[in-house]
Amino acid sequence: MPYDDATQQPTEDAQIATDADEADEASEGPVEAGEAAQDDAGDARETFGREYVEQLRKEAGDHRVKRREAEQRVADLEERLLDVTLRSAAESVLADPGDLLLHAERADLVDEDGFPDADRIVEAAQQLASERPHLASRRPSRPVAQGERGDSDEAPVSLSGLLRARAG
Image (cartoon, rainbow, N blue to C red; front, top):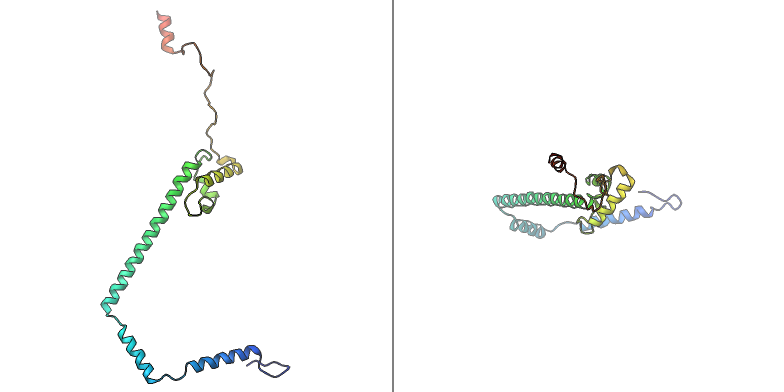
């Protein structure tokens, strides 16, 4: 037991530990024969047959397996929902919307309930496209047709029309 050097008395921590040990010993005191018999009788009343216990364990195991399978199915469906929403929301911003999952956290793409949020996905895709332009969509934003545009009074030129005009 540690003693205080100045007073030669047990330290406060040692005194608390000693008090706790004495309290434990007092509570563990001798058990009367009637109490022991009552505990044994209580145990006998609460025992079940081996077959029943095995049946309960098998049922519990089956329920655990079903729960795990259901949790896995829910996780798979959540991933599919995120993938579909991500592709539809970010396809105009990124060349490959799947790149967003590589560069953004999933928590940033879903709402408080865990469902994909299209607005957050678009914002994250725009931010990614500005930070990494090589990931941006390569689709032209303007028409790329060549030649004169607009309404023309003349009929369009065709090869068959030119051949007919020369032949006849």
